[in-house]
Image (cartoon, rainbow, N blue to C red; front, side, top):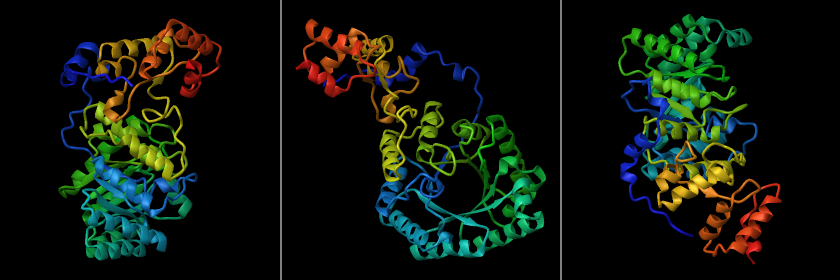
Length: 418
């Protein structure tokens, strides 16, 4: 297959300014300078999806290694309070981090119950590393009404859980479930109590995917004021989103722009109901927006590994990583990409008909042949497969494609060449 070399990749930023007018940056919406942290929930929240298969521990090892190589900071490795299997898997995942000297830091979910927190503490002591304890409690009026909870009871659970985390030497992230539908006075009371009793992260949750980007911005600013009013230094804010209204990535970007310190997500957005924020698409967008500079060429492997391990098929039109993302057979579109390749310019080929440069994410453009193709598609395909594009052969394939009701497979085209 012919290879194309972009000899001017170092000048990519200048070319982008010359060839692409980017309306996204006409008005700068964020003055953020602090780094963004990421918490990958694939191995905990992700496995709550009703459709997933809980993968064997060897596959979980593989997924955890990929998270580490992608520069993800923390990983939720389970809820040990759920039972013996959860304890075993969490223990082995934490041991892998130690044995292979991974940079990623483990955390675990825990209800604001003593047994859940002690289960995390026992694993931390056994393995010999700190494990962040993510203690969660419902916070919205609808949840309080359903559970018959009083605010006083919720505050007592919060105090006991936070004090126990301190006693056991566990860093604590305090999580209010359904934060995006909770009353301001309730949130102020809960977060203030948790922080005063030792929590050093306040996690804001869109548990049922209710929020819109403007709502996220307002809420994050409100939580920042609560944190500031406590007078406690170095308390960070997390955002945990769901995709029930398909606003997961947009909401997470809003949280970043509002100043949240760490964003949660799962590979391909797996999770309960419609799922969580898609970690892979979040990383893609934040890289394209200039918020991060991670090497993301391993993202396709991360997506594929989780898809296969959890037996969740990836839709063909899934953004960036679906099989259709960088494939075109449409004559006008394909012709523009082909002309860029003819210039030996992969930078141009990856942008002329794509809002996402495939090569930055370990992928490439694909020109196919179908009923909407032009003759140039056929010529290019043949050249890519080291087959001479004679007029007779091009016409034969072109005419066959025009009669088809779908794209021709490589096998079909090769049969026509014979």
